[in-house]
Length: 128
Image (cartoon, rainbow, N blue to C red):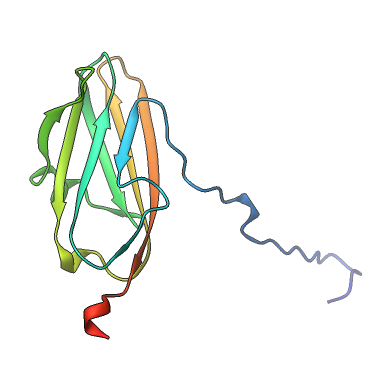
């Protein structure tokens, strides 16, 4: 439109978005930038912290999946002694395309750690 009157025109692109980056003390694997074929994976979350874990949230493509993964995660330990949780994600849950996994944990000292990864899942070559 024109620039007269009380209307202003504003155009934006996705310049505000930034790629997820590793956050000290919270690790997600496979790491950001992973590219793999449609299939199953082992999702791992490692927390290197001195305080106990009291709360966690996991989002997959913006959808809360904490409840479903809570029953799946098997505990372990980092070499430094922090907890590691791993979950086998079955084939039907990973569709072709871009996916973002976000993890937020709260520790007993009330600090919060966040991290996110972005994966690219390629189509199943066997079905083509």
